[in-house]
Image (cartoon, rainbow, N blue to C red; front, side):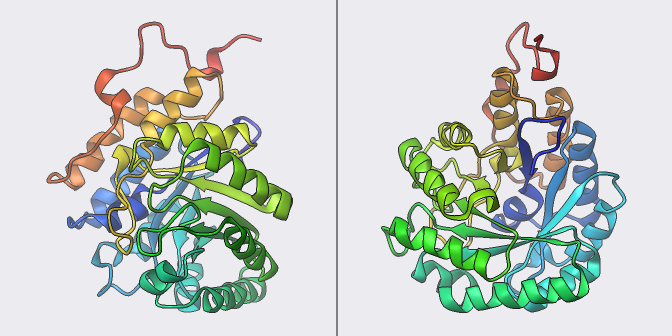
Length: 313
């Protein structure tokens, strides 16, 4: 949910989705410095890591430490991905404000990504929601429907099954359920259609758009989602990210480009573009061998550019 002072919420997922998808392991101190820079720029929701076994994703081994640091930043929603109850328990113990659970609409991707069937993942959502209710009722739970627009393993994912999965996740106790274009298959018409159906099915519990730029349609798809009433968007600084268990699924929407698009349209994000560009420096310092992307950071804002907060009327 976006705050009253902004029109949209930009949720930075780079410290999780971005860093889990590269070979480099960013030192904890560098992660914290990057998060500090994102916060300074005005980012108010950050997915700082995931609670998974370190042998599977060594890049995420320090997530509890990163959570503890991020919690010192006033007004920041600290989020982490959890694939199961054990991960949720660890995340709640570390002090996260929000849990995100990956629930795949693709049966094949579900087995590859979390080693569980779709039905087993809904059961996991129920367990996590019940644990949260008993031990940390203030913590929010979001079930993101992965591969909602297609799957590199399975191919076509029927839209009825996507909506069914979202409904099942909400019935299991999730506070909200958004749609993820895990493989970068979506186009704007598809985005509009499916988010419209999602809102019709679960109403105000319809959550964020998590879209990828794999085929160059990331921003167009974000705009299409916004036009359907979506006000929360996941993105990754420098476009880092993708799913390790979805072949060819590279390239999250670039946070810097997304913020520019909205601000240029007069849609308030609450994020300072110049300070956001500065936050690229600690990211690059932490993973010096990685290429980070972004059209606007390279070209710069247009001459006379005015952020949405300076618009009259």
